[in-house]
Amino acid sequence: MTTLKRSLGLGQATAMVVGIIIGASIFVQPSEIAKLVPSVPGVFAVWIAAGVLTAFGALCCAELASAFPRTGGVYVFLKETYSPAVGFLWGWAMFWSMHSGIIAAIAVVFARYVAYFVPLSDTGIRLIAITAILVLSGINYLGVKQGSILQTIFTLGKVIAILAILVLVMVLKSPGGVTINAVTSEHISVTKFVLAVAAGLFAFGGWHMVTYTAEETHKPERTIPVALLIGTLTVTACYIALNAAYFSALPLEKVAASTRVAAEAAEAVIGRRGGAAISAVVIFSTFGAVSGIILVGPRVYFAMARDGLLFRWVASVHPRFQTPHRAIILQAIWSSVLVATGTYRALFTRVIYTEWIFFGLMVLGLFLLRRRPDYAPTYRTWGYPIPPIIFILASFFIVANQIVSEPRESLMGLGIVALGLPVYYLWARKSLSR
Image (cartoon, rainbow, N blue to C red; front, side):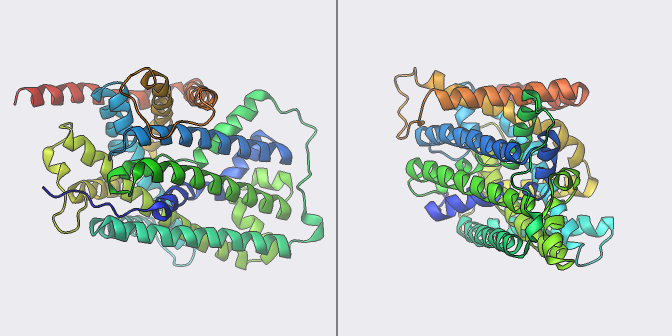
């Protein structure tokens, strides 16, 4: 039987963590945070808190990865901790909305920034987005090594580009443009601060995805925990540095009001060329993010099929390239359909917050697993039980806040996920009758 090939080392795994997380959010999200927390020190506190929470989640995920170093990541953790039904619901939401939707969404952002240089109609933007999905899926079809090399190149490129932006902004800014110490007299409530942290956490999305490729990673029980830690710390440092650059170039009120803060900061110190420079960086960043997300997703569907929770043929491994080729094709087709129809917008916005239910359950599972005599992770979460407790509270707060803020959309999102339950039981019954 053909098996998956172990081609990922620490460098590629770390590049995957960094490359997936740094997409387009950091070039727009700081404005949302500045609106909620109109204080420069407060904004930095928000990004630090979001980075720390992400690191806590990564540490917990690392322990689970060391205990269950199998392809599938969160799907495997939920299945082993609770039941196959819970794992199936994660995979169900991933394929139909969460994962495929984020591929579609970021691919469209990529195409829109391409349109900065080449005028494109709405149809042209969709075609560029679909082309990007198909090309990157094709590269990953040919081998995990090819996909990981591409991911490493783009991750290094985007980090270098971010450093270049920092240098340009810091060196060329006007003396009067520094607003790092700017503070507002407006009272910042705890509620708004926590909402801002939740907004920051979404910019750190994707940190868990490296665990999907465990069976293609050398010594995954050691490599994945180290990659998670180095990757999340690297991203946190990049995010804080970028915010420092924004506030060095623009006053607080402009950052809060901006719809494209990175471009406006670059324009303030470089001129009109700044918009082109930032657009190029976003193109590079989003292309790299889509590459990483495309690489990891099919591993979950492959694992589900291998466990009998999807069509068995989805678990096929290409005899030459040693990749889950049919799962890659399925993901590419559905993501392209979402782009072509535009339905990813509704699905993605309704369902994306539900992943935090699964994150909370995943980390809560540590407390259950540690009671089992057969649970033997090679790495244990630093500071246990404090980091897991803090992360669980943060996860469920995000979910509760979403439900209170948008009850109708939230219930529709939960309904989409819950539809997976009857599908699971029908599938399980079919498997037992064979």
